[in-house]
Length: 252
Ligand code: 13P
Image (cartoon, rainbow, N blue to C red; front, side, top):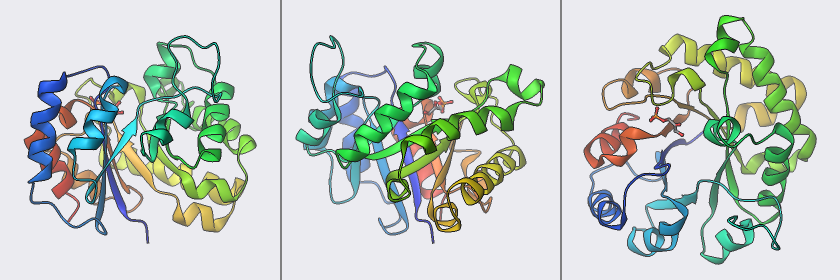
């Protein structure tokens, strides 16, 4: 069975003070046990070390939001998977739609970053998702196919145990327009079918697929009931302790 996972992607938001309050609230929150729901927060890079020293690491994990494909070198502004490991962190988010569309990261670069991160023993939340124009042109499956294809060519079959997929339709991110439970379920079914056909049945049944895009304290419970939704990647609502805690609780 796939353990539920809720991730909070802070993106480029907050400061040390707001992060401190959020972590204090999480540390004393009444949430289901870790074997029911795993919780990962991804603050901005500058606060990763601070977050990891403040948070209850028996219950929560801290994730980076991105990293580069190389170990070290002349790559001004980048961080490496090795550095994330050096801070004793286990997670990185890669291929977020904002990295793909604002920062023009290609499928190939994201696949390379993912392979390198897994080599460094990181767990990767690998994001996929179509834009509104893709959906309107009936190209959702084609886009998911391309995004997953470049990933699978970079990975060995064993690598997949370190991957969590986050399906985040771009039109639902930060817009307040959540995918309906059925729309999310359909995309997750497609991704799971893809994994069964292109990787294998075991990877298909064991890989967690999160939904992301305007998840709130109000809509999380209904989405969580869909059989193929194994958790959430939450943006805006993960910055508000009460909302994020309600979303974590929505699983049980
Ligand atoms: P919102 O929850 O703010 O729509 O963001 C979703 C997201 O991009 C999480 O990675």
